[in-house]
Every structure is written in structure tokens, then in C-alpha cells.
Image (cartoon, rainbow, N blue to C red; front, side, top):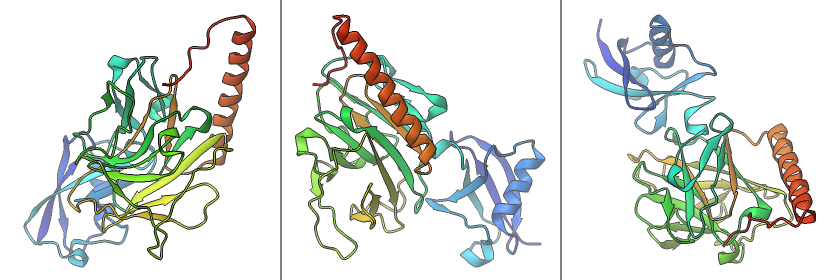
Length: 298
């Protein structure tokens, strides 16, 4: 029986198991069976990525044009983790990743910009949601995707991502008059509607929580969902098809917080709003006691 040899690789790049898959077998089902045989079961639902594309549930090597006898590498992701949780930040600046990876907490280091990167790369056509507290966006904030080569901090106030060849980002904050501006390699890439018309989009400052949904299409466009905006916004970045890119975000705000999730969960948004209210109450009490408010941005 002619097969394709599949190396199943975890998010860290380690080979978990190598297994043969026949040309007609449904690939995801065969790979889950192989992982189960070595005692590895998903906390959520395993999904599999070949190159930069998700293997859909009905796919076989026969359907996708696999080569008999070939050795291919497939990355396995637990859909409740990895590309939807933060994994890397600059801890030297006092930053932390909390809440099982769903929350980035910026430190108190002055005159720095701090960023965070997801634990695993984001498959194409997969949407991820990132949330900021609107009251603490400050002068510079950015959100987008970047390679594992992205720097995660800068010793100045800046839009950290979108400024080099390794990242593609939406930049906003007071420095852009709260306009949403696409950047790659330091060059502006205009945001457009689905019809291709250039947009000048100003973020709504009345929201307690600003949640933005992004995905990278198969053609390398960034497609953006914004609160109160029913149609996608398109940023035609042209992210290379073979680039494995991770969700990234940055802030300059003292005590700034950035959340990441696989869906705009209303319960999570409500929880975040409660956290904002709690922190506002504590700040008011501190002011009444005459203590200095140290949560100022640049």
C-alpha cells in the first residue's frame, strides 16, 4: 500500500511521531489516531497545519496532490491553545504573561515600548481577537503578525511592529490621532473596504474595551474586524505564503494590558470590563489617600 510518511511536529518544532498515511485516508483523522496511540490527546480539538494552511477535516493526500513515498512535516495545534495564547515577551522590562497565556501585562519601565508574541504561528484564514483597554492605549499601540525574528521591546516610545521586514501591523493611538494605519517595513499600507476603496478609519474612543479581530488570508491580506463595523477592513500587505507568522501586539502604557482569544467571547469582554472598573476604583482610592498615580504613559 502506497503511503506518505508524515512527521507530526509540535508548536516548539519537536517531532512527536512519524506515521504512514495512505493516499486515500482522511489526514486529520489518521494523525489524531497516531497521536492517541502515543498518549497525546487534545485539551480542545487538534488541528493540523501543512505549510501555512490548515488541513480541513475531509482532506486526503490524494485530494491535495500528495506525492507517494514523500516525507512531509505537519504541525499539530491544540485549538484551545498555542496560536491563541501569548508565549513570548521581554521579561527584563518587568512584563509578564498571565491568565494561562491569555493576558499580557506590561511592566513599569519608563521610556520603553513593550511587545508580546503568540506561542505558535497563526494558520492562514484563522481569525484571532486581541483586546486593549481603550483608556490605556496611550500614544502608541500596534497589533498584527510577525515572524519569530520580531524584536519584543524598544528603548523608546514607538509603534513597535510594522516597522521592519519581519512584521505587518495596524498602528494606532494618540500619535496617529487614533486612526488605524497599516505598516510594513516602516511604510504605510492603506486600509481598504471590500470594494478596494481607501478608508480613513478612526477608532471609537468611547469603548471601555477595544477588541480587534485579524486573520491573514491565503493571498497574504490582513482582514480586520472592528467593533461597530459590520464589514471586514482589508490591508493588502502581501504576507509571503511561506512565512509562518505569529500574532503580535505592543503598548507603551504603564500597567498596560493586552488580551488574546480565539473568539470575541462576551463573557470574557464582561470580565475585562469588570477588571477595568475594579482598577479604576482602586486608583480613585489611591488618589484620595494622596498616593502618586504611577500608571501614566509617555
